[in-house]
Length: 373
Image 1 (cartoon, rainbow, N blue to C red):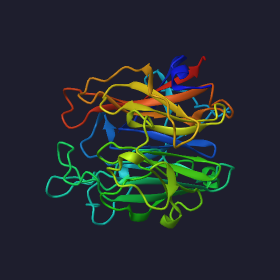
Image 2 (cartoon, rainbow, N blue to C red):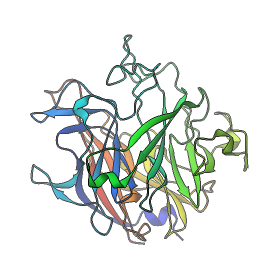
Image 3 (cartoon, one colour):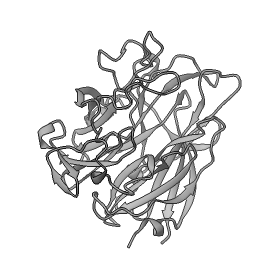
Image 4 (tube, one colour):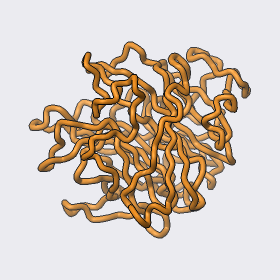
């Protein structure tokens, strides 16, 4: 019986960083697209003489290659260290991968508006792949909140509308242009309306043709929805876990009877289903944390009951005020049939350097976890 308490028993092996040495990239997440791993990241700047230039794009994307067994391919980085090399895309073109709706200050590369506010269009979870893992065309989705933030990261509308993005990639393109990124489009600018639970933003997983979507509004309550994986764009096909049963009416953000207890530790993380354990798993950060303290919880059913989250790995924080965040698991990097034996995790390590006054220096340490009990 794999409970969260049992998963606290493990060994941890740092395997280097996930990086494109030419870029300074914040908050990276990944999903397996066919035979490669596809990464999406938030604020990204080009490095000039080892330091990020001032202009950023609010999101970027890239590829990493996999070893023959499906694990991440470890390379020697330019500085002689080991890591996972990222490639692809064209950040120099100053175009964010997640384009903003026309009303959300799309002309500024960072989503900046004339009044000093910003629409960052930051993804909070990796792409949700719904088809194509058999070698065909990959289709995936991301839900992104249309949040407008001030300089202190606060917002007058903490629960904005949520846009649905559709991502498509034909693996046949790899033979002609390995650097080409999947196409991305806004399928619906306001899939979830303002002041509604933003299902899918907080996390998701697909099991037996059903997509399970977790939503966490600004009050930090956690809710669950589901939809056939082939009907993600059809709002009429969604069901919601409300007061202990599935129904067609979504819960209100303050519906205490529908909150999933222990369905996460409150912070950013990753949901996946472990075939070996026959368990749904969440790995991520505590709700008030800014340190690389990874917690895990599991459940036999996405509706729960979930184990009380348990800390299982502590990384090295950075020197910035927000020292570490965007704690992620990467089930797509685990060789087939091994998701109950090992897992790859990463986080954003943010360092503050005196000669760079407009950005932290970001690093994405990666760690291989081997469960020992």
